[in-house]
Image (cartoon, rainbow, N blue to C red; front, side, top):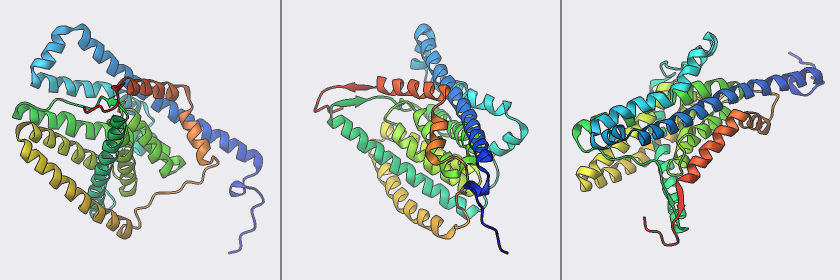
Length: 337
């Protein structure tokens, strides 16, 4: 059927209406930015409050240091506390928005989900390599970077609890908070934009250079596969697999260093080979699992500026930059760790 030419720019919309549409989109993006910025700011402040609590209650700090089981239980409560702003935001959302955020559904395809999980884990490995290279460069320049470390488990009970506190709970809560509460509303402005902005927020929330590069790369991978498969469970599985392997490796290096080194080499090799294969298969076979393009009145740069430059988001970014810089020390050239 013949379609008459559209005399105006964006979809044939008259300039006056086009200006209104642009203003509406900016307002929507700023609303999402304010929400995310407030959640991240609260996340940071709750972390700092917990640190001060431990500093001003010596008995509690001593108990965390001396009793590994208590420390892990405290870690569970701490994780629930600092991510509670995102959970509260979800609770206050309208029913329609909750339905959009709640992506706890079966993947569109089980084979695609399996390929996605293996591929996602491969990109986590890539993120680890990139981070290690960056840290090596900083070390060669005389900088020492802290943060991201955790004490290895000293007993089987601690090991099991650490699987929960570092493996299972962060995978569930962080994926729901980031790839759910933050990312899903942003998809109105395009899947790529939503994935990258969410990965940026996810990376900044880690607050240290030992994790930020990794979290950004892993965040993009998890966001992509969540969108492509239509299920948060895929992102949770990738996150869980990465965290569990880290806990297992840390534990083995503590109790059986030789076995730990063997585990690391085998796990890395399998991850690279299987990941490359599964990524190629996913991109080739799962052609229907594609990101959706969204025709918006705003260009990419305008969307980024509208999302990043609101007061709550700027405050959260500055706080996280300060936290990151605080963990960097110049120790002199030739620093050997």
